[in-house]
Image (cartoon, rainbow, N blue to C red; front, side):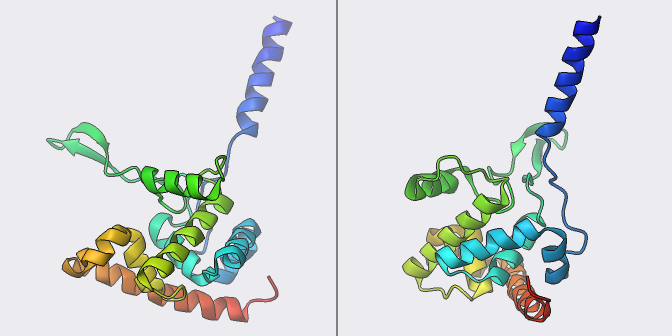
Length: 194
């Protein structure tokens, strides 16, 4: 019995050790509050900004829109006849909601084979990498949160074809992302030293 108790305790401790906190920060409307509650988020975004040149507020606003800062976010399930589950809407996963294929491109191009979409450092590095590529390929400035978001959501090819123009709802969302990036920028400028 003592042996089984030890195994149960080891199993309990091991299961707790691997648990990640995937909950959203408490105040998603305040960049300073996010930075104070989750300093690792700010460090990750600042590191990605240094590497790729994408401003922290642009990444913050995009992550807010894509996952609400929830590390294991997934798209909803789809149902046939309203009751039979047939899979998820897409393969988007993690803070950045990166699709499987785009994530594989990132892993291959950066050599960061151990990166995980549910790790804020990797997710922000991915986002910086993608938006840097968008600037190079499409000429969208890195500080244009709305434009970057449209290309991020539609993919660079879709954006080039103008697929976003036939989606008024998406244009509204992109505008909100741009507004949020502006708000986050002003808030971060007023925060105490981060």
